[in-house]
Image (tube, rainbow, N blue to C red; front, side, top):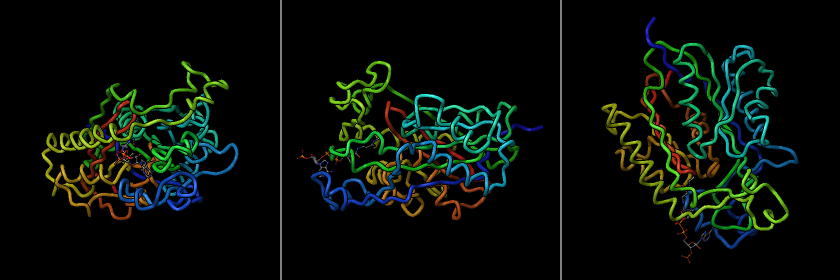
Length: 329
Ligand code: UT7
């Protein structure tokens, strides 16, 4: 038996129906459509409405569609990993709740928190379970309800984010069209630049922490932007170099969708034309762990078997990384 690799054999996504437009945000904070589009590339984002509706709902919708389209029965799933920084609750894990909703019983399940790089971290983690030889089918989900942590009085951040989920099926394969190479990195230098201070064990929720807004997402956008532009491009170029890939060899770059200018700078450094870059930031904004699987889902019809695809992300922590894969179907 040859070396076992992990192949993506299916992909699905889910975004909620409610569309929050730039025009609506103009009524909420001092901003304007032109500023948002020119600085970020975002026109609208999706918001999950409804009491008690969280990331497990988003993830469940994506995984349900994935099981249906790949013809996978719940009992065939060996494990499910959910990348999220907006878990449904502290515990049980969102992954556990998604499994319960779909009748996936006895499979391992856990959440993984690596902010906007979460999907890449989870994809590599899932792939390693498969490479180890014991697991055959693993689902990797990215699900975030960013509207649950965004401060809709803060124009610096509320324009950026949306809610969504995407999921892939990973299967053992002895073929060539597998996840070929991964770089994932982190550096705590970002801890003061992008964070949620409260709600955890240091500052559990109290009236005071709520009044101070510790439960809200904070970002020093300008500083994060500088790190993001450099780190995401550096790591994508590094993975190309060590796999002897030129810009022309790459069928698609699938970047994290945080800012159109970061996406363009990364493509430029990689010498990849923008027509080979997946971009849906205009419709969904930044859905954190869901951006990359949502792009895979929307571009699935265009990908061809054997295509060289590069994923790249940067986010809170800081965390960042890149994955090189060959599309399997
Ligand atoms: O995915 C996780 C990682 N996160 C990222 O990668 C995000 C990285 N950062 C960014 O994408 C950008 O920094 C932002 C989109 C967040 C901001 O864009 P920017 O070009 O860096 O703007 P800025 O923060 O430097 O602000 C420029 C000006 C400021 O006014 P002054 O000080 O020049 O008078 C802001 O107060 O724009 C003002 N501003 C706004 N104006 C209208 C900030 N937010 C808004 C707004 N509408 N929503």
